[in-house]
Image (cartoon, rainbow, N blue to C red; front, side, top):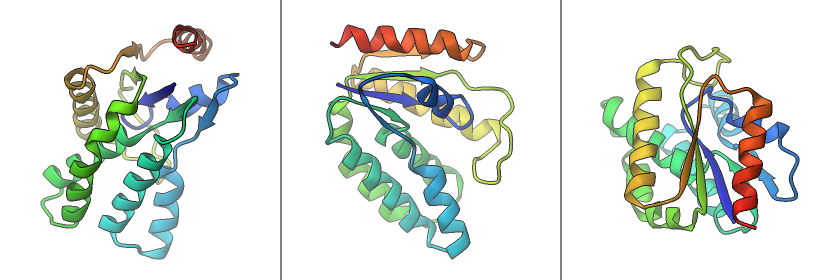
Length: 174
């Protein structure tokens, strides 16, 4: 079983994973940690994106896991950067992303999060609505295209209710 909590920045994925009591291996997002280190060390943005993609692809090799972000998110962000930043700095990341896309079929279920209207600026996450809309649309369209079972959690649903819904999803696959 490989369940992914997926969606744009600031929607409550990390909060939900932290609140969940489960025997599944909980895999936290690596993105914020990688970005924080990269910003301090002036690492090349293309290399950063490739590292995120590879870490997320490796996570899909495990079983009985629930992931805060997954390769699906990494791909969406890579394509967003490629289409909107008007630069070639993600060229090799896009090549790698295309090679890794078939790995998405390993996902058992994707939990999608409706975006919040305003994301708190923590100095690492993006806060603009345009990127959130692109990311969420790309993820949704890819999940539908690959026929991966999914559930959408509403933006105004409490953490307690989200945990209850997530436990129901987990129990469906036991």
